[in-house]
Image (cartoon, rainbow, N blue to C red; front, side, top):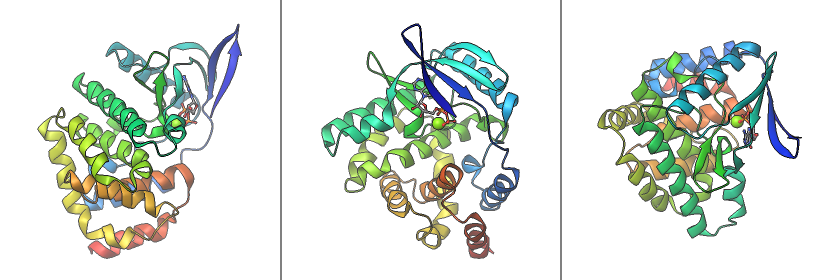
Length: 270
Ligand SMILES: Nc1ncnc2c1ncn2[C@@H]1O[C@H](COP(=O)(O)OP(=O)(O)O)[C@@H](O)[C@H]1O
Ligand SMILES: [Mg+2]
């Protein structure tokens, strides 16, 4: 939970690490992903309290050392960090474009370039959804929200593949009518990815294709899911996005009946 405050006329963010560890739902999701062999979508452990704070501090340090634009830690307390403000919400900026496709594409491309830059420095983000991206005051893109670390459950290649999937899901609703445009932008980012990263995504895609149709009707966000899928198919990612989207939607909004979803996946594969 993050709250904007003003400290001596300067905006800052107070982030409190509240909430449970959601062990049961994450274990179920993990079992699904293992069963499917889709490592990039395995959920990292969700730590609570001081552990989550320590994790976020460590990741912020690692990313800063790699010259990735992330907030500075300007204060701390029990299960609490004070972070510097690094700009305005990428998600809000996309919405403010109100259908101006050229403006949307410019923002999306800036984010894709920024993610590719992070990867080229041997790093990964973990949750680069639109809400966790920031448009920096001087232009460019910064990144937020590092209280989970995919490296706890997957390799660097898988974590980078995960970044592309989650980012695509986050922007897909702005490309519902233009999946080809999103695909073209993604191709530019992926052309800078290592071949191993693309290969993992393609492999995951093959494994998930069979369940895509079964899952399509689930959740409030079916249209967003389909848009992500359409764009990713065009860059041959196919159905991976669908599961990523469902997993993320569940974890963020709780709007998917995970038990029924899991039984469909397992039932489809067995
Ligand atoms: N340092 C920051 N600079 C700018 N905006 C921030 C900053 N920290 C948080 N925010 C805003 O607060 C929201 C929530 O913060 P985040 O770190 O993603 O926590 P949560 O775990 O609640 O998602 C972000 O989506 C962003 O809009
Ligand atoms: Mg967030």
